[in-house]
Length: 433
Image (cartoon, rainbow, N blue to C red; front, top):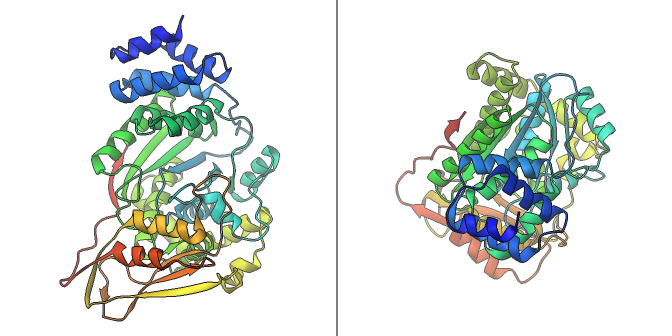
């Protein structure tokens, strides 16, 4: 078998066999096939697409290119969730404790933020001494004890994805749905959970810009899950506007804690309860979504979920006094207030602009080696649909950087206004099973 023949076959729009896909993945991981040939095949896949069968085979080859987590020592149903990334998305910090308080087991491996999309690990590490690098034994023990652990990737999981993603990033082949789907699902499957809930976002602050693109990606990922006999479901959610009010690592942790204490923004609470209900149904802890919603809301209201979050922080070495007293979190050097220049209603807040601006303030990375300022970020005093008066604060900016006038202007321009009341758009557009 020759790599050049596989490239030509895909260039001509033909379907690759399992053997051909295995040959390409194994050869690349073992450094027997050069970058330039793999780049050529990736471009052919981008242009010609892949059938569902090819995508299943690609996911399978990537999944078995490295280790797979064995979670059989964890009692009960192991649930997992994945978000395709957005601005202000701190859902895992809230949903995890909710479902754990209801008896589900969240054994989750998360990533770091890059660009305008924040990472769960970075948010957790804004809590002093929080350890996201547990051993496999510690990870399993903690999930058995309290129902939740969130860590960085352990073992040699899906090395094929690491190599392919780095190459896709520099060859203009990121925007291929089969490649995105196999990348996400190979990692989720390697993490060893019994069920997977996918939050596939669309809009300006998301990777998928339209609801149709998001549905297309969600459908193939759910089909991949079924191929591997995993209960996999997907929520199609909006990222036209930032989620919640806080963008930035410690700001988002504080908002997550306040949400667990019953003081969360309505859009964030809505998506967290919906996701929790679905995950409880997947774990067979409830018989319907309605029952799942009631159980999730009960354990949010009675603070059981908050108590699980405190235990989670303590178990992973975090200084829980910061959770008990949110004012202890490090303050940024500078604070700015952005004020409205008119009366009216907030019509839209462009999520991409807000995410990029937060990154420029120090809250995110442009390159993997960049150091994050955990205190930096943006707090949206006014959200879509809310009334605003001339001179009223619409956003508060936290940073330790100087000369940020252009960023402040960008944040103001991210807001659009209406003279008439604005209907708040839905957060969850569809659920795919």
